[in-house]
Each structure stands twice: as structure tokens, then as C-alpha cells.
Length: 228
Image (cartoon, rainbow, N blue to C red; front, top):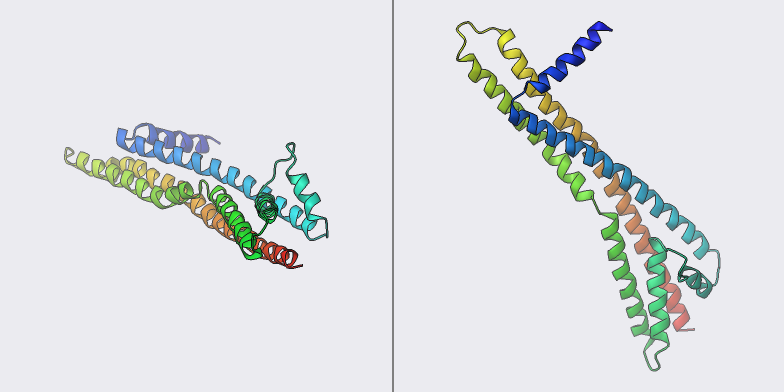
């Protein structure tokens, strides 16, 4: 137990005795790591909610439920649509509005409907990709920020050796150790951010494909209705 305490204290002591610039680098990396993990939990919760909402809506949509009744439920002021529901809502609303206009060709009705759903799809994609650039930035820059702190710390350690007549490893080891902590913190911030970014980017791509397929399938259903 004493050995563990001593190790912890020595680590804290190394950070505490590091140069101001190295401490600043460590602080930046600590903030980046905290921001990264915060975004991970928020984005994970948001994507799970969007996926669950899409599955529930598709189950209702393909169950043979009347589209007007489904639209009225989503259009209720008390109801907050999510993801695929918003795409359906915007498409069906535009379809009903255009179809009520006399003399408008079925082709123009479908084009306007699909355009409305595409606009809604773009908004959904923008919401899904929120915070992903931040994760990518943290994942790509943190190792270099940590490396900068390490290089600066090692440089100061060797500069200090110039004032010592007989330099030993004991003189340079603390400075190098505190500098390497910056590299370790850079990797600690970067690795989870990169893993999370790749995972979320894949999830967003799958959801986008799901939404896009629904638009094509819904357009085909409306096309049959306009030519019925």
C-alpha cells in the first residue's frame, strides 16, 4: 500500500513540478478528454434514440395503418416527431398541399414532395453529425499537442544539464518523466475520440441510408396513389 501511495504522490509531484508550458499542455488535454467523453455519451444517447424511433415508426408505417391517421398523430401539437417521423411528416404535408392544387401534374406533385423530404433529410443529417467534427479534431490533434509538451519538457531537461558538472540519469529522469506524461495524456484523449468518431460515423451512415431508402419507398407509394 505504501508503495502505491508513493507512486501516486510521485506522479502528482511530477505534474506539479512541471514547467508552466507543460502544465498548460496537460490542462488543455484534460479539457479535451473531458469534452470528448461528454460528446461520446451525448451522441450515443441521441443516436440510440433516433434508431429506436425509426424502428418504431417503420413498424407502424408498414403495418398497413392509414397514412392520414399516422400523419395526424405526428402532426399533433403534443407529439414531438423524431428523425424518420419528421421526414414523413414534411413529405406527406407537402404531398397533401400540392395535390389539393387543381391542374398540377402528378409528376410535379411527386417532385415537390420528394424535394421537401430531401430538405428534411439534410436537416436530420446535420443533427446526426453534430459534434462529430469535434471528436475528429480531438482525435487528430491531441497526440501532437501531447508531443509538443513532451519535446518542450525534454528540451528544458537537457538545457538544465548544461549547468551541472557531472550529469547523471537522476538529474534528467524527472524532467523526461514529466514530459512523457504529456504524451500519455495526449494518447488518452485521442484514442477514445478516434474510436467514438469511427463508430458514430458508421452509425450515422447507416441511419442516413435508412432514411434515404424510406424516401424512395414512400415516393413509390405516393406515385401509385397519384396514378390510381
